[in-house]
Length: 269
Image (tube, helix red, strand yellow):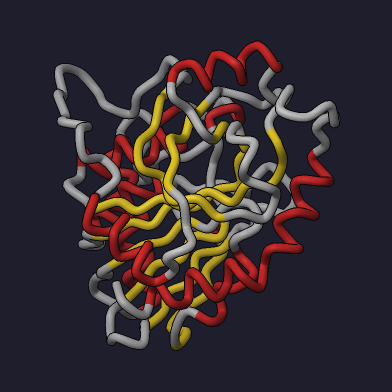
């Protein structure tokens, strides 16, 4: 019998078991979630082991937005590690529940993953960052009003974004700045007033993903690295309106740099 959505642990176990069977691998070492603009370099990360449609795995769904991928790649990295590469994610605004949002993280944990790399496309609050700029996430603010934790589960979030991985990413590319990511619920883009609020709170980037996944990763004891691609200036930072097609276009324009960055990171993880 398939696990129910109300039983997230069993559902993750079921998905992990199916991945083991279809990929022929007993466990994995690291996982990457490739968000908007990031998936084009996935085939450069190592030797392919398996290519699985996410929608065919227990508990996963086909991404609701065009350009967000929808496959799980299992690879052997140049350092001999097994990597899970998710080209797509479920967003909170899809209204499938928080457990669906973090299902990939929990499945990776059941496969033994200890290092998680989360990427996304984000609005830049910091006016110094032009579209196409990758930014390492140093901390986050969760404004969704939700959590993937159930019951009295008290998790220390003070080093959610593992400092050693932040330092490693800056060794790979010393030009990368760091910033605080603010997750809103979406799917509407933030208003200028909301962006001003995020700036006052200490935010540098705004988006609709990632923070909830990071919380689940910390619950699982994973080390976490996050990188945002600035796809547009956040509302009110410039006088330009926000457009999803422009967000996708910015990701495509930055694809060669992002592919190289992720490739180099995987080579040292």
